[in-house]
Image 1: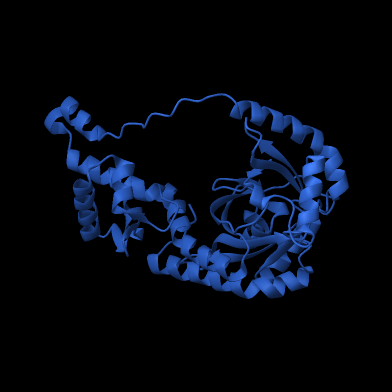
Image 2: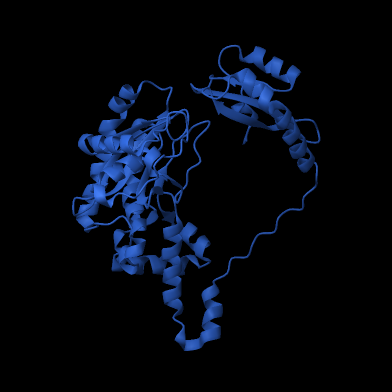
Length: 369
């Protein structure tokens, strides 16, 4: 389910007024590939106690699974039920939430432990932790102070000290971590360094191809996502850092398997589970595909992990020249042929992978985790 303001609802394009009037009469609206090719949607309005439409709730599907009519028959009764639950919840009065107090907990620890507790060190680590949790393009001083509960002057002194030591750097009015923070961790945390190094390249890749991009490493017989930059879509695949998929059915998995010697590849069952009707289920056929990926330097998977989804991936090499990760771009399978997808995305993918690899080589990173 997706909730959106009324302006983002299903009616749109030519005939908007007619569709809007029909939606008001029928109590629902449909979108048959009006906003994005390959997507159909059914939506119903949600009203407040005064009868005003405040938002809409919708279900979106690929055309490979539903027509607009079949989607309406499948989901409209449930949508109306959910709409009733939402309207009932909106009708319940709610007290204004109280602001949570922001405290500098290091002061309490200092009182408890006395001179054995270094308050300034705790505050500096809190600043590092806040920057490490940031998923954007850095944090302003005010944001750091709010996240840590420190006074602005204290947060500023911590940032200036960390800058002097080479752990952070200013970027305009924002502050970012530098790769040197990896020295504070251990080898098992180097995957975080890989994600931080790759992210600017993934952001540039998404801006260039206007599709979501991801970075993954091999974890046994699965791939594990360590970085992802989504693009704006009406419907998108919900993948977060840490998500795992079977390597045999993914483009990044095949690229990563291709980077291993045959004896290093994880053991697979005699018959691989079919995730869609297109999934390659023969280990022998998969071996041939992986060898081809090794020779070509890329892998393309067309609706084998999920119907309607096509993915193209290339390897990322560490300082020792071995494959340490894979980067991919996914798009709707109805958006051109596989060859057109390869021609459109492969140059940008290879450029991004080379940029990540160059940074890894500069830092001497040879392992993904």
